[in-house]
Length: 148
Image (cartoon, rainbow, N blue to C red; front, top):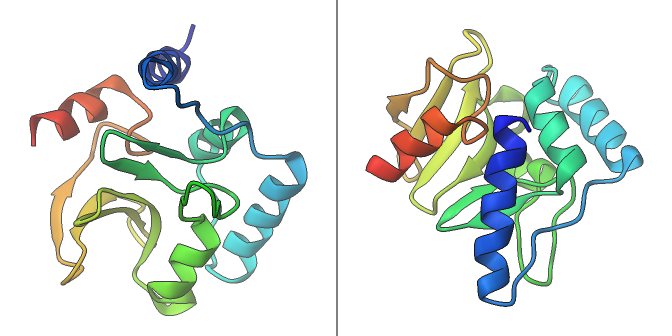
């Protein structure tokens, strides 16, 4: 079992305790549309770990951390990747946004491809994630985030 599978199994088990479930996987069409949006509008390619994540579930809202889905969910609300990136700057933005905690945004720098946490109100970088290809997809980032 991969790190992401172990983490999602743990998350699903905890959510089940509260009679909640995780989102189903994003459809192949939704992922293809998301790839086109990222390439055509944001001039970037989606990280393969993020695409793999979407193939397992279409976004996540757990313990104060959100990973944006291929689609925006209205019930219960979960931000979508497209809507968030359009709202926060579109193709001219320095970062591509993949998740948040309410007061922090998790993004990838377009130029360096480094993963960063940004202060939501100022968009100043407050942390970097050199060990991972995507935030929250490996135990080291989850451990780091839980220590904050």
